Length: 380
Image (cartoon, rainbow, N blue to C red; front, side, top):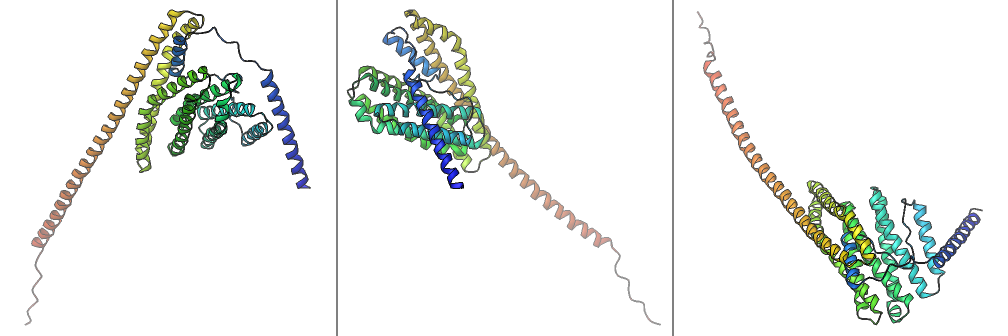
């Protein structure tokens, strides 16, 4: 009887997933991309891309809308979501359409990972975030396995797909950075391994795109994303190196290093957030002007971008100096502590010696003043 109910439950689950995936497919086919803005000059496009990178804004996917998470799913929710995705991909026979779904699911996975880390401090939830990143990597790896076939296609659909893959690469790098700033120390080694795999995967894919016969628009997007990712990685390099040094101390059992890590993260987060907020309102107005065709606004935004880069560099140097000051302070405190301990030990030895001498002297005094033994009485 139990076996029958189990088979019935699985059957209903599969039917439900098929229904949902059919609905998803219809929604995707009926949805249309938002109308594009006026055609921008190469300079305007480059400045806007640089601005988006400095503002840490995600790349927008073309041809589909990414679901924005609003809560952390339960274990059943994770299971159901993964099942729905697997069935949806399995039921899709067209290779390009299959790849499009895999890119979409990969993008939704990293969005979910980002949401989890920002909205939950639960260790198990954070483990789920890393699992989401692993799954996103797996989806993109499957797309890249068919990279040669996609690169040989010259149609617009394949070009959009390839651009979406590189957009996803930029977004994934941004989420990895946020994970690195949030995850507890014991989870970072696994994240670094994931980052290395993702970086190798990205470099291989972008190199193949640059050397292929894909449309120039795709190559331009590849060059733009490559520059964005490299710039973001360079900005994060100093923070990452400092964090790795602190992690080594934590592994060695230095409990104070955990507080040092928290201070580093708080300083980095506060500085970067302040810089972004400082320029947010001003840049929004200028971007609207650029999209309306105002060429003078392009120069304004370019100047703002330069100012932001300088401030980011200054912030990195300030945090680096603070980190050195903290290290020096701890080193001084440690040396002072050792010296005080040494002095205390010397003082203690002197004290013990003096106490011993005092006790000996007291005994001698007692013996010298005590009456001598009485003589035995003489007999008559």
